[in-house]
Image 1 (cartoon, rainbow, N blue to C red):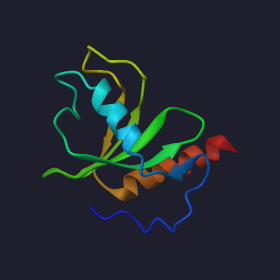
Image 2 (tube, rainbow, N blue to C red):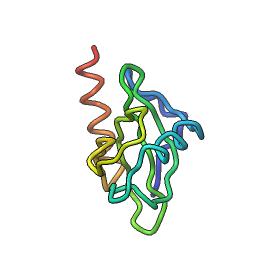
Image 3 (cartoon, rainbow, N blue to C red):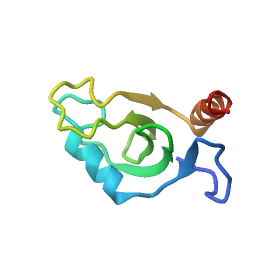
Image 4 (cartoon, rainbow, N blue to C red):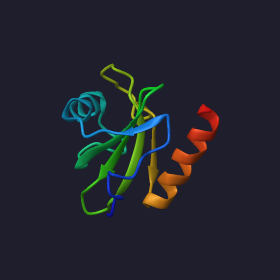
Length: 103
């Protein structure tokens, strides 16, 4: 999966973020049956005004996930809320839409 060079400036409210702490928080929150359980992930970016984090899925299936962290250990597979994207182009459209909403 190819992520654009992080010298690309993400529009607000998103910013590049390679946080091991956010990744560890996500792994704590995932319950059995969650779509990201047992997936290998990498933190890519974070939304500054919400608890939304963009992760790259770096196992055999590749892709991206935007996750709304709850800061709780979850027991239902629906939480934390997660949306999967198959390409950077799909993610970029979300980031651009968020920028318009943020202004």
